[in-house]
Structures are given as structure tokens and as C-alpha cells.
Image (cartoon, rainbow, N blue to C red; front, side):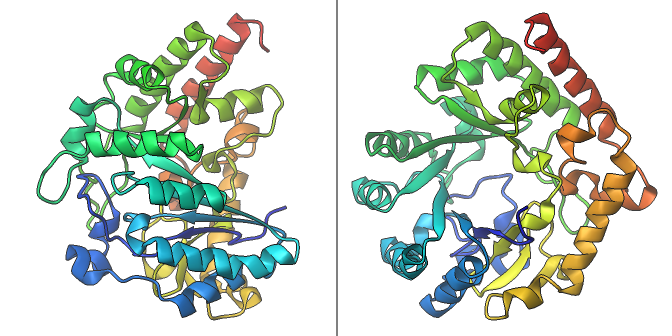
Length: 365
């Protein structure tokens, strides 16, 4: 079983980014509230501590280089990553490196580096230009779609492209068929759809947020079209996870693991917080990478988080779909936890029931 804080979501430049996406939460954090001025780049001493922290106590390690825009750290930074990881590879560790990028800075030098060092890159793309460009622009309001598509093309040529994460917002959620057909037309067949959600410290929803019901309706429309297309090469990770679990498999997206404690977000100063779907507050701060791993895993805040997860699992345990969702994403049920319920469950149950009925209809269950 994976240990707590075993997957590292690393923000080497905090929320620094060359884009200013309207729904992005990262640059709204207090330490990045003034765009670049409040953001730092992780120094090499902290980087080494980070690598050693996550590699020392486990065999299989994932580093997810995130942002902001992680490529702003520069190729020299990632060359140092490779150098620090090498001693652990020499000891027989299994290390995977994933980069989540807007792809606007990708060039052949980046692609060559990724290929030579076995990095793979996922790209944020919100569908056709008319939707993507409404929310994903440069700071001067220049549109980013063309640069993102160029970056994807370069990553494909180097065989390091790991698919697209598409944010589903109030801009594009009414157009599931158009979005899916766009991706297929452009030979982008590994897809992850992410609901724009969450709220700021004052309880106000982030710009372009949509309800869970709207998001699930989007996914169901995609499911219907996906079944019609019947192309085994098209992987829609949100749906693949549910279907695989219903068919007795084990593929799980993080929201269906029930192990929010696995994911650690590490900022440029080496501070460790929970998965960054949760707010960056003291409540979810666990320590720093210069501290012993065993001490961090015994931190009061982490143990409190685990208790919260387990309390909710007890509440959900009798549900027929618990074996699939494992209580779902902590961000979704956190506001309801103290009230002993989950306002999102009704929509989710209807969603799972519909997916199951589709599988029955096609004699897959």
C-alpha cells in the first residue's frame, strides 16, 4: 500500500506563469498574488533535499512537475533533477517524471531533453481555439492556442506527449461533442477532463466554475459519443477509471483512490502541503523537505487529514458505489464533512448508475 506523501507534486517556480488563465488558482495564493514578484524558483539545495526526501523511503516514486508553468525553471534546473535522481536510480529505485505544461515554451531542445531523460509531458488545452483562447491568454491578453498546438506537435515528434488535460468551465461545458471531435481530429487521444471548481479564502467561487451536475452531464455526453466511435486508442481517463473498476479492474484516477494523503505539494521553499486541490493554508501544511520523512508522516496536520478521510469513508461505506469512488475527492466533500454528509453524492450516484446501464446495454457487465 502506498505510504502517505509518496507522490510529489512539485511547483519549482510556485505560481509563476507566462499565461494568466482566468480560472487558475495558483497565482491567487498570497505568495504569488503579485504575479512574478511574489514567486520564487527552487534553489538546488532545496531540490536535492526534495529528491532525497521522496526517494529515501520507497521503491516507486513519481515526480509531477507542476506550476504555474514548470518550464520557467529552465532546462538547467531539470538537468540537476536528473543528476540528483541518478544516485537513487543506481540503487534500484523506479523513478517517473511527469511535466504538466501549457506547452507555449516547448521547443525542440525541451523535447530532446525530455526524450533523453524519459520525462513525459501532459499539456493543458481547453479544446478548439474559440474556447481555449477565451480563458487561456498571456498576461497582455494575447491568445495562446497557436503556441500550445505548436508545442504539442513538437512533443509528439519526440514521442514524449502524454495527452491533454482539458478544463471544463462555463466557457466550454455545453459543447462536449465539438470538443471531443476536435481532439480526435488532431490525433489527441489521451484525455483528462477537469472540472473548474473551488473557492477563494472568502468563499467566492473561482471564475468560470461549474456545478458538479453540469460537469457530469458533460462526461455522460462524451461517454455516449466515445461508445459510438468505438476506438480503443481513445483513452478518456475519467471514464476509463470508472468503467475499469466496474469491470473488475484496478485503474484509478486520484479522485477514486480515497487516499488524498498520498499526494504532497511541494513549493519552491521546500514547504510541504496536501494535494493542491485543497487550500494552501496552515491546516494542510505538513512540514519541509529538510525534515526527516518519518517526522513529517507523523505530523499533527497529516494525521488529522487522515482521520478526516477515514471519518468520511465510514459515512460512505454502505453505499453501493463506495468500492468505486472510495469517498471521492476531499475538496468536494470537505465543506460538508462536519455536517455528516456529502451534497455531491446524489449527482455522483446518478452518474455511476448511468455509466453502469450503458455497460449493461452493450453486454459489458
